[in-house]
Image (cartoon, rainbow, N blue to C red; front, side, top):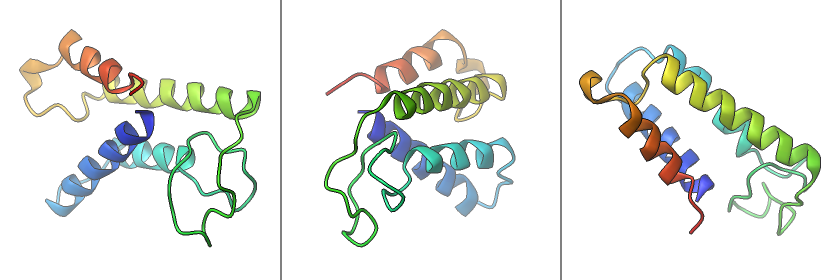
Length: 111
């Protein structure tokens, strides 16, 4: 699911930070992921539903609106562009290419 993919990105960014490496563009990706996984305190129109404590998410479901759909698509486009342009999350630089892109697309498949 998309939510799991976003959580995986956050996990990898935390690992990079824990290893003492500079975040650079990873910080930009992290911030964009946080935008998509924000709580519903301001209202149920959020791009990506996630589970949290009731005090953080007072609405049981996210409402899908045109605004939230556009935000989700545009932000994911930005995230993928940053990942591709800066070769982020590539453990072996020689392995970058269509295989990496295919893996990202596969991660977005619906369960």
